[in-house]
Amino acid sequence: MNEEARNIIKDHKNPLTKLGLIGPKLFLKDSSQEAQEKVSNNLKNLKIILMHQKVERRCGRAKAEWNPSLNLAKVNKVVKGLLEHFGYQDKSGIYMYPEEMLYLVETNRMEISLNEVPLSVQECYDIMLNLPEFTLNKYRVYKKLMSQGYRVVRFSEITRRKGKKTKENENSNEKKRGLEETENKATELKKIKIVSSNERLEFKKKEINKIFEELRKKAPQSYVPNKNEEPTPDFCLFLASNSNRINWDYNLYVSEKYALDDLKTDHPSIYAICSGDNISLYKIGTVNIPCNIYT
Image 1: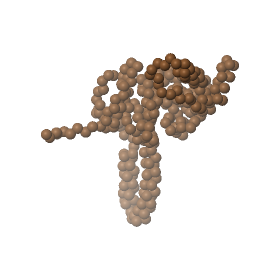
Image 2 (image 1 turned 135 degrees about the vertical axis):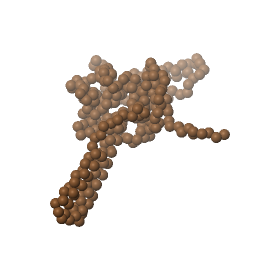
Image 3 (image 1 turned 30 degrees about the vertical axis):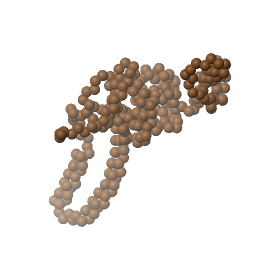
Image 4 (image 1 turned 90 degrees about the vertical axis):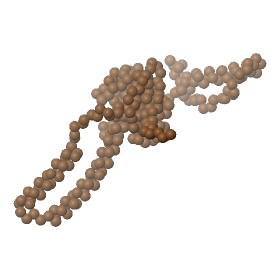
């Protein structure tokens, strides 16, 4: 144990900064002593490189606590670049979804704990697979695309971000409208001369009707599902060049069937077909076909 610790400290203090070039591939066998020495030296250098242990500092990893009631991981320690591609932040803190938490643990970028007890990669897998809304195939697709440099975010998270931005815009617009209405009402009240009690009652009725009209427009309404409504995508896929947090490039659907049915979408989509250990990705875009073709 002490010997291993010494080797780790030694490798950490003496990192590999330069790798010697082996040279072009030798297609023809050369039995000369010079060629044999060159091959043995290359093999020796390769062995040194493979035996060198890559040591990462623990302070370079984020830390989070798994919350079973929310099925989210609350981040206690943030590292550089974490919030650009993972999780979300609100008034109560920073949270990670299960697939994000597991991916960061697997890539050695986060430490996760439950009741202040560190969790292993296997325990993180057990947590994620016991969730009703998530499957192993969904995580495999997520991990594959993230490893290739794409940005993959839950569709529900994008909807939440868009709703938050819309609400912020509405609040700012409502404040402006409120100030304008207050000024207009003050002007109207100065102009209106209530002569009798009947006119006062009529004026109150009009104001009350205005309030109820506004309530009918803004109050919660019953949702009637549309049978022709397109299925909700599992994820939203962002290309590496897309730095926007709301406008995604592709809808991402994860399917375990060999066939794709009812491909009705107005947004360019990618379908991930999982069969056994294989994941096949199919890109489907919007194509306009003319109704009449004249020859």
